[in-house]
Length: 561
Image (cartoon, rainbow, N blue to C red; front, side, top):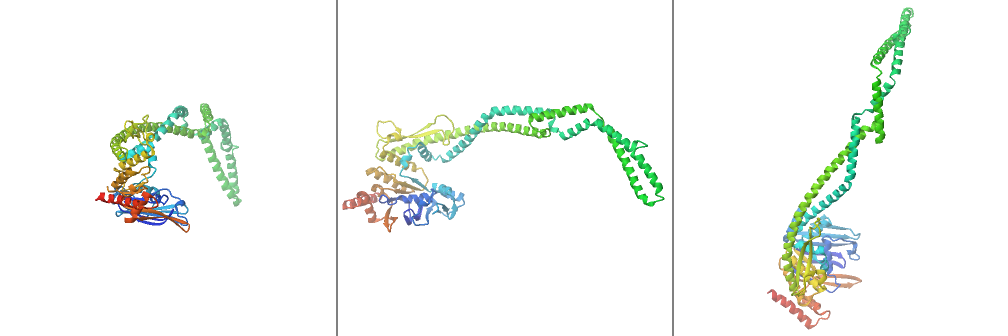
């Protein structure tokens, strides 16, 4: 439960330190005194959005510190352990709002995110605002209340997860189906193109080698005739070849070398040239012997290159790029095939998720129906206690139109109420007056709270629109909640509710030096009597109002004895 609250420079509060106990704590004060500032502080400390407008004029920052005893909150203890924010039975929450609108948050002196504050706060404090009855008219709020009473949180999380995956798969399958016709046509074209290219052995194509061989065959006559002529000129003509002339020169210089030794060096060079010419001639002969004009091969090459150029034009690529193009077509076909397989797998998963969702949704519906029967009886009893003796509330759980998954299951939840005998139950928004709606809202909140484990409950003027004996019953119910191991706070303007508090806090506003401030203090004894009297009779306190206040407080005290 909440044991300590510290506020610095928040709105109209300069400094405030409060200690809290269990039971029912009532907060009262004049209209505009700042009773809501405590709720604002709690909201900010537990993750509400903040801006610089919350800072007291003239201050640089606002700061809120909360101290909790988490012994009565297993959920909060588990959360702290899961997030390695160790505790020794207590928890400190701190929120700082700076002048630039930025804020910092801490749990047990370690910085955390706003989401972390919100998650922890959900297990520590639950706030029922003064406009809860307005929210109650919304179908989603009625469904939320029923699910909270039925403890459907974990089941709803699973259903919402399945719904999200189902929706993603549904969209993917819809896109896949829309593109199916184009995909089939494209697949057929790719298979035709790949078959055509494979029939021409494009995968093993060496276009450069083909061009070289075609060039060779095209010029084979010239190559053979020219080569043979050069072979004769170099070596085979015994009288006029280069080789025979070199032989003559070598012989002549050999004779002269005996007369002029300096001619021996050119002689050596000529002998080497003779060897090179002979070797070149032999190599040329070998090459010419291997070459042969092949008209059939040349025709095949002509046809092959013609086919390649035709395919290249058809596929709009260069002939030498045809193998790469074939690989690209095969890769695209593989992707289409894989996409078809994936679409089939997605369809199977989609169908499986729909089956799993249906099973969980059916369980959820059963839980809702069972919880509705139990909770509507409790709420109807509370309504009758709150001055509507013939009042009756029904929780109608019915399937939505169609069976398409939704994030909250297949059910519509609607609260129906009959405030007078003889009238059939009708939707809450169409039959309840303002006062009746406030009482029904309070009855629902009180009845639904019985099954909750949140240790601290805050009711902000939820008694609006009621008075007299009904207000006393409201106070008694809130007091009973505080006696059932819970900590209850109630901001109220009704004395009948205020006298039921185990503790009484007064919120006061003062002005001085052009500055308005709100303060909060604990009331006991005569101070509390005077505050109850003020709530009964206004600013001027008379003996009668003081006596009435004392009587109300006395009756409450004797009732406990």
